[in-house]
Image 1 (tube, rainbow, N blue to C red):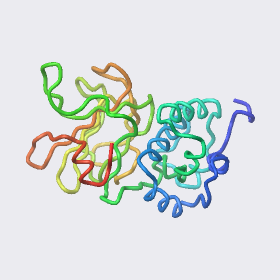
Image 2: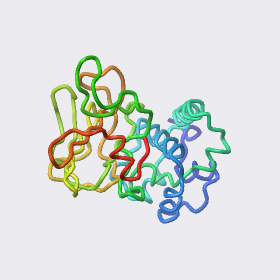
Image 3: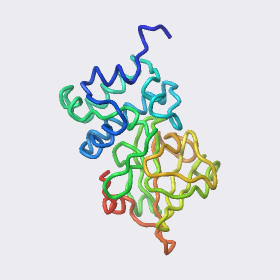
Image 4: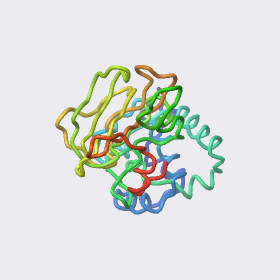
Length: 238
């Protein structure tokens, strides 16, 4: 890859018109950004990850200096803009700290939660095709980042029937979060995770018809519940 096709996140932030690229400023901007802004940030993060940038456990300084392929990033950004009807000026308005978007620093919402992935709901909770669907499917590009929706402890991570690869997190308030069809798993059983932390990437493994995240929520009583209102109750709109 030539130098002409590479760009650092700091340079990207400058081109987007982002001021104050420090982690603290990013946190404040993230709280103010809209759902659309978070979707665009997630798309940019997905492009970076699929381009080979190692971000999951990188400190802020490293994440900001990492390089990504400009052509791939441009293609992803253009797709996000076209799909969401967002102008370049609006993208600048919603831009946030790239390191924060990549999850190197967890940025939970006001309710202490974070979107598990960024993208449209492609299949909802409940009965479909004559069978019960115990979660919500979120469409996202291959290798887009998945986030811990709430803080807790990883209780399962690895191969799983039907999912190919999965992750399960027991939250501090007793809920079980399930992530299925993953491309990669970046956590291990017993590991402590914080809301907003990148835990893996979106894939198409197992019984799947396209890249997406199957996200399930089980309440402390052991019942599967609709993740969308649960996320909304915790300050996250999907």
